[in-house]
Amino acid sequence: MELYNHTNPLFTKWVVSAGLLREPFIVVDIGCQGGEHPRWQHLGDYVEYHGFDPISESIESERQAPLGRNKRTFHHLALGDENRKRTFFVKPDQFSSSFYGSGAGSKNREVEMRRLDTLFAEGKIPRADYIKLDCEGFEPEVLKGAQQYLAASNPVCVTSEANFFVSPIYPSTHFQSINELLVQYRLLVFDLNYARTPRAAYAESLARRPWAERDLLREPPQLVIGQPTTFDVLFCRDFAAELRHLEDFQNTSATIEPPSADKIIKAMVIFELHGLMDCAVELAYCFRQLLQDRLNLDTAIEHLLAPPQHPRDMADVRLCLIMIRKLREELNQRRTHSIIVPRRLRRFVRSIIGERAARWLVARL
Image 1 (cartoon, one colour):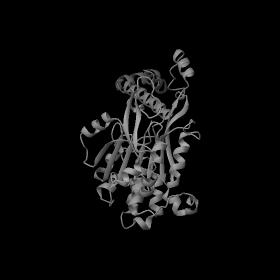
Image 2: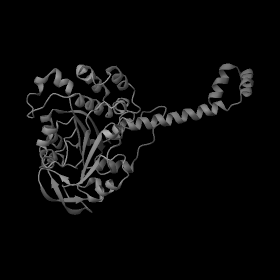
Image 3: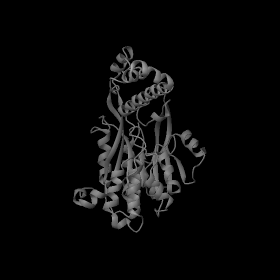
Image 4: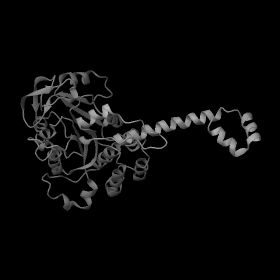
């Protein structure tokens, strides 16, 4: 389960090959186990990547990995709203490690926590264009410690894990705690993907009485059961809406400057990389005068109109694609079997039983 990843972004590749950006593209990855996302490879040497994680083994693994480029910095730090040491619970599945709840088999560690505001004031990190948050429920605390940093950066995009559950820590839901912080910087929801988790009683009952396999030719795919639990959410600046209806954004607290040509191009790149080419084309039209000295807008739009290679990775869509693949395999087997019937035999059968009956018979051989 993840946000859309465009595997052949022609506009982005063109921006890079033609050298259309005049400043680096700064990515801040908070919770960077597994390394940087493959989408950043398309930006080549433009990307300056900063990864943060409190688990030392993950940081060392990434530091020792073969470098695709030199502009990669990994920080063995936790991020939050304090500058101090704090207990962190490392679980057997390290991707589930968190500041919240120890759980079975977890090991307690004292880790160094810093605020992004502090790191920025000390000159340890540059202004961010894109911030990714994957902190197992701790995302609002990271954002609380980054208010000055967000104001200084005016990021184009923030992606975050979120959920809609309530708790004593987040009584108005985890998502609301993130959203109310980001909307102050005009970052609005543009996309999301989510995982469904069936209730335990249902899952146990279904394991005892599993569904029969569906008939490919007569039935639809299975329905994915369960309440949406974990969400990946894409928050972006809506520069087109700001241009047309700036009065709608007057209640945001941050002082935000008008976007530069580089900001608009970066926003177009982010939209394409996340499968939102329509939003990128809208920016090309709305900011034509700002962009016309930097890039050929007709060429930009032509690249953005190229069809993507795959659909969004959602559970129901995945089951539909599996069924389509099986149907294609069955169709190819029938075609192959039909082709190997000798032509002379076909002519002989036609002469004996007639054309229509021969077609019927050959189709079932």
